[in-house]
Image (cartoon, rainbow, N blue to C red; front, side, top):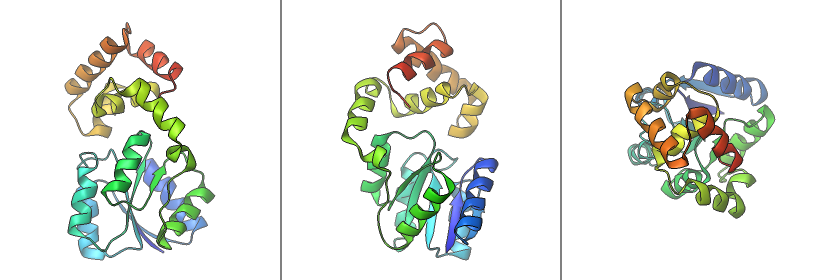
Length: 204
């Protein structure tokens, strides 16, 4: 298996690469952002599968996926994410991805999912496909914009504004504004209370 893995977090790249190399005997080419991934595709592609992080610099949400598919129509792409909602997973499939992989997957599950997609099948975890999960997410999160939901997801993990800004490729001042808006919509006094309210509502 030849796989291109694009993610801006070094630890995530190393961990997933190790999974695929050790458990799946795959040859992995790593990229740190969308533009580096596209360069690798041009110079070293095609690959059996390309894994794109939903939140890395250059992706602009699913626009990056759309652009990648347009530039490489015969290449198989899948989205990986630690924060994207069920809605995003469904939209990714609609846009042409052949799979959606949460970063929380274990080594064997990840390798099996990759093999499944390389075999020509579409893979999405059952929890993502569940209608019940989707409705619960929409009931709470429909009051937020997509960017606000991404910021809130990071607040739930205890991330700082600087960490969130780096992950979403935005200015720190922009993140502060999003945090303020999220707190206002939830009637929360601070980011910690906003995270508690979100978790109580089942938001992930």
